[in-house]
Amino acid sequence: MRAACARAVRGAGGNERLDSARLRNAALKSLAERRESAHFGGMREAGQRASAQCGGMRNQAACVCAVRYACVLAIEMASKRALVILAKGAEEMETVIPVDVMRRAGGPYDVVVLPGGNLGAQNLSESAAVKEILKEQENRKGLIAAICAGPTALLAHEIGFGSKVTTHPLAKDKMMNGSHYSYSENRVEKDGLILTSRGPGTSFEFALAIVEALNGKEVADQVKAPLVLKD
Image 1: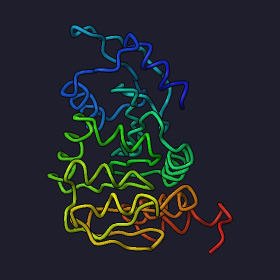
Image 2 (image 1 turned 90 degrees about the vertical axis):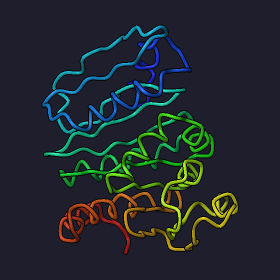
Image 3 (image 1 turned 45 degrees about the horizontal axis):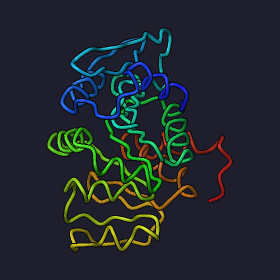
């Protein structure tokens, strides 16, 4: 997955400052399209585009485009998709585990997922493109899920104010700055369309909570059973 992201960044000419509007449009287009093959690509400076086709990637993660060391991952499911925004410095477990669990569930999905990691969360917080995607998702009343330090990007972009949330313990003070949220010590917290979790050790619970929110408890239980998780 990291290698695919690196290829996308190289395809974009290694450019760190990419057009946020074009990133947003590409990401939203990816969410809207239903294809059996996926594409990943980036955008060069001065409007030049570089893209490479990843054929035969049905129900797999595909790098859609890059923004400031970040890759937007679209997980194609039955009729909808999960958008996982992976920034440089993201926590690997908090990315790979939710992607794999959602793949096992098989969709349909309609969720934007923010993995954690201090540097990853900082990059997400500073990205205008991520802000646009989150605002679009919030306005259309779609589920937004964030884990570890990832929820601090919600604060930065003024998403879900008034919700009850949880974060990694070390991100609590930052998250509560301004008292825009109420804080929970639960390992996973869901308040309306905002779903948050605490860290790498809660990644499976986080992923299964996403599955349950979008597919129901029965499907979540079916996915959980063969994973041999401790209750």
